[in-house]
Length: 337
Image (cartoon, rainbow, N blue to C red; front, side, top):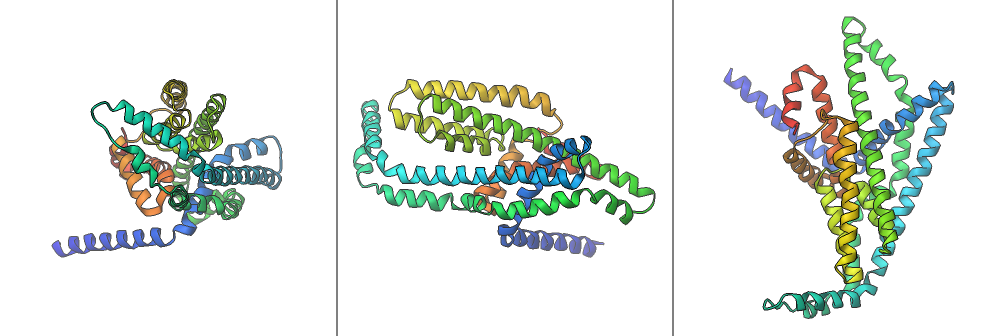
């Protein structure tokens, strides 16, 4: 018996190692595929609405895919142009950074720190190249949006036949029960991703508009970052806030403009994230903050910045599956807040 237990543990460890190696090596294909799976759940309500309005399914699929292609194209153009413009304009802010450094030096009182001397030797061209290299994996995914769209075409086109295939594969009394569980999992995943995407989109547009009204440069870029980082509860919002408020202080060199940006954007963010989203989403899909942190670290280590953005949706999908499988429900409870 001990030998059998040891063998099971050894096989489980080997399987985990092989799975980890596979996830790491297959990253260029898996990330676009997972994005396509997420998008297929997000566009599913629109597809269902069109079919209920007596549209033929092939025509409804074509319309939804065309709209999604336009959205992906515009997202790619926005991300690439904003990121490239930000890096290109970075050397022009060298004088502004020197003024901020002198302001901070004067505010330290007896604790003098010679920031100006440190910044004098800073090569902004090399800094821009470093930033491009650091965010390269993210823009690499944006550049692979065509591959995401190809995956999306096949997933959406084949989803209508999935239920029939499952019924044929499990012909018998268990077919109806398994089909019901799969449909419940799909419905909950669809609800989570659609609501999370709509709230994140509202948050990104809100940040874009507020920063544009205050005259902050690269407002569209910070709006895009707010949209993407909103998929990471708490941590993502904090990072997005630090980036936009810090840049506003850097651009204007005053206290009040960044302060009002902080108050307005965070106030609206709290309304969206703490009032509207929980009321629509419900409490059943909440995740433990510690689990969110560890999933962020794990998927970030595995897939870089794209993995960090996908970490919480992936973890939420795993919890939804555990909730609908009786043997795994204790795991879902442990994953909750």
